[in-house]
Image 1: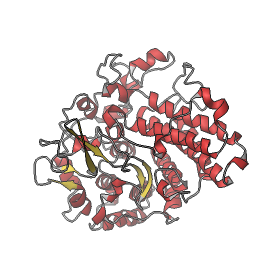
Image 2: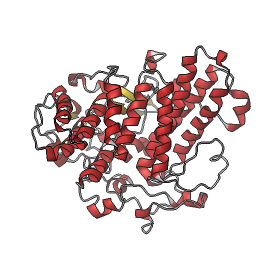
Image 3: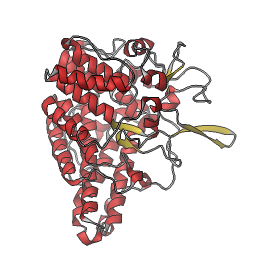
Image 4: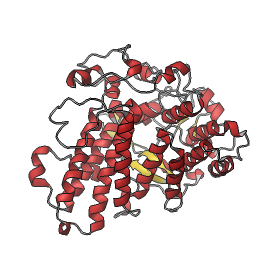
Length: 474
């Protein structure tokens, strides 16, 4: 799936068998952390390189009439479709399984256990040791937060060995998992620095800003908007990040921009993906190997409703062929072509952008609207709109929360946020707008937005129970 050379994320995870001899110095600790990032990247690239977007974008109003194998079921939220246990490569099975998340978690559990045992004099400084340990706590918090947004209740494992030993572990309540996330991310904040030891690590390794961004999102997901607002201010007040000019909007997705807070590295010259979101959303002339329509067609009604201002630079710079019946998003069009055995293979070099400044600004605006601090909320919302070249929003306060979710839809289109934004919208206002009758209000209230667990996992782990909404449907 991925093509890469000797880079930070190519470090292999550490196995249990090598623990006793491995953890000796700073270089070993760094390799251990690199394994955690590598496994997270693998997880977000499962299901044909699409998992991050298939969870966060595909089942929303961004897309319509997806016909690609299994991704049509994912798009229409028909997540209970039967898949044979032997079909481990089936995208639906991969999306319903959380094995890869736990591989990443086991790796960082190992880092959390062993890095503190390495003598201080084996590190270049105490700051280096603290940053490595902080990255481990950040990664564990991120993996669990990501999982609980997908499945709700998930098994909570904070010790090494339990997963490898195939211990049967029941699902913990989402509230318990999120409590662990809060504990871990606050530990990460206490350990991490703002600055990077190396400029090449910008955004692709966690720093204090990454941890605060994760914390703000956890609070928003919990509906704790008071703390969400306060946490967003920790990032904004530091002035560590700056907007990228919307004239150069596409530079964000090449990675490591001034706006990037946390990203998954895969944009380097010796990195990149053969199968990923670019392959499914682009076409000629941006993807020369596809002379037909985009595999995943965008919902033209959504585009018209979201981008209702012709001066919006995000639309003019991040979309193409907009006057056709098959417009495309070109955020992920940083592509090179490799010749081999008479086959031309496109390789996309785009980081997965997890958190960036505009995301956090709009999250703050969302929090302020939820707290009925409407004037302050409008100020932040209009700041983002002004950067994009559009005028102030002038609607009623009663519609402000939804307007901010729509603004996030414009700003963060195809960046893995839309599905979770719409869940928060539904929880806060009762407004359901996933598109094309993908989810009714009654289904939403019954928890349809949480994914089922693949039955194959329930055979392996006897203590697992099915996600409540899907329990009678699989």
